[in-house]
Length: 200
Image: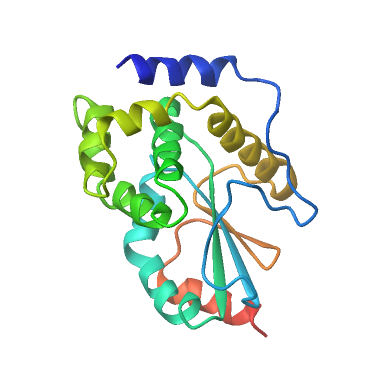
């Protein structure tokens, strides 16, 4: 568990924002986008890999949002990590998804969310995470190397701080839909109404 211990220590030690700042359009180099870049509705999701309500949204609501809004070009989703407790595990799992690369990012994030109960509740969560992402082709060595990336660690932290300052994000999941803050894991029916309103 040396890597996990390092993550916890780094999280406590990190105080000054560095690395990536927001661009003019409030985008970040580590942003991952699902959907067409020119979609008229932008959903920015702030979520944590250790948040049960976030996992519920990803398993229940997001597939319908993807099918009816994202895949049809009406909306795009920008996913942004907003680490919660346990801090080391939350940010570590977020880093692993990023290290999978842009093409595999959402697939690995989906695996992490879908299997959250199993790896988070295990005696050795990091080992369980490694087994989970092995399904996506990431080896244990890949994960260990990923978790040593200070640039990625800081990039996630800076972006989360920006979300708190810019949009007053203080809980997960939270969404910014065309500039409007929406808090909590909504059912598809409720989220659909929000998107319909944003599309007017």
